[in-house]
Image 1: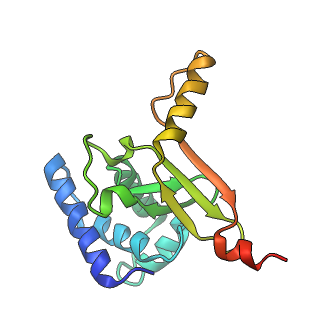
Image 2: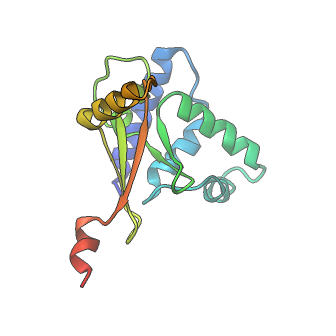
Length: 161
C-alpha cells in the first residue's frame, strides 16, 4: 500500500484535473476515489460501499456506481473487467503529463497476477500499435483498447516449483 502522502497528492491532483475540466469532484466522489486509492488491490463496488458506510451510513449501491461512473469518465480510475473491480489510473494520478483532455487517451494494459492478485498498469505504445494494426487488417477501427493480461508476478513465479 502506498503512503498517505501519496494519496493526498493523488487526490489533490484529481481535484486540480477536475477543476481544469470544469467538473466537480464532490466530497462523495472524492471519498470513493480515496477508498480506491487506499485499497491494496483493485476493489469491487460492494467492498467500496461497505467502507463508505463507515462515514456515510446512508450510502447505497447507486451512490457508489454514480461516483465510479464519474471517476471513470474523468480517467481517474480504471475498471478491470476480469476482476470486476476498480483501481486508480497511474498516469492521471501520479503526475504524468498528458497531451489529451482525459487520462484514458493513453494506452493502458494491466498485468494481473493470478497468484497474489497484484495488479499493475502499464502503458506500452507498441502493444497499442499492434492492436490498432490487427484491427485495421480486419477492417475495424479501434481508437482505444484495454488489455488485461493474466499471469504470475515475479514473486509468485519464483515460488512455483
